[in-house]
Amino acid sequence: MAGRYDAFLVRQWSLDGGTERVEVTHVQSGARILVASLAEATTWIRGHAVAVRESAALKELPSRSSPD
Image (tube, rainbow, N blue to C red; front, side, top):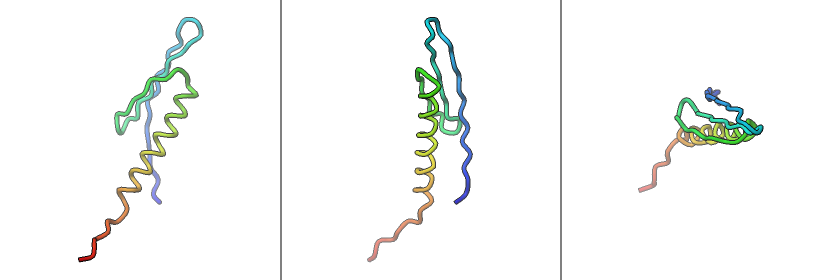
């Protein structure tokens, strides 16, 4: 199987009271999420990368012709 490259832009804000906000954007698709921690961002990145790979793999499957 060929490798796939995914790029993510991560922006992190440290807010008053010790809270943080993290915005993650998948560069290729433009999909974006705003979460409350880097841990949540990492979870989303892993899940999104897997979903994109599975979707690409399904598109690569040969189509079946229906018998006449």
